[in-house]
Length: 172
Image (cartoon, one colour):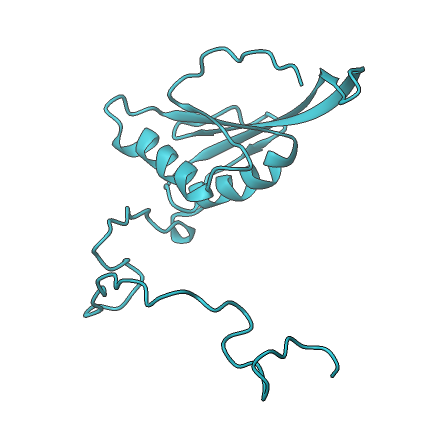
């Protein structure tokens, strides 16, 4: 498949893929909006094709962790030239979704605009550091230190194989 090399993306632009964990994107957006030296007021999240299914829940998580985010969504499609295994050129249509999250008010007349969630529905994002208890757990909870593995795992069939050691299932 031939791909055009994308232009350099800004620090406040995120391209969501199907392979990266949602928690990584959530952490990055939080640091871009709240903790970064530049304190960006907007973040642009983009996804294409199957990655759209990951973008929508990600945006909902972000809106429920950061107070006062306005949202504007834009959907579009682009035609892309692709080569099949046999070498033929095929033109495909790819759907893309771009979502802008902003602390500042956006154009309220835009078709994809959503106002910020009420503060009662937003739970402040807390960065979890290893070795400490997550905030949702009760006080007094102690983190167990990692124990070394106890040996080889036995898989789904465990160790018991019936009366005869060589029995693998099936009929006698």
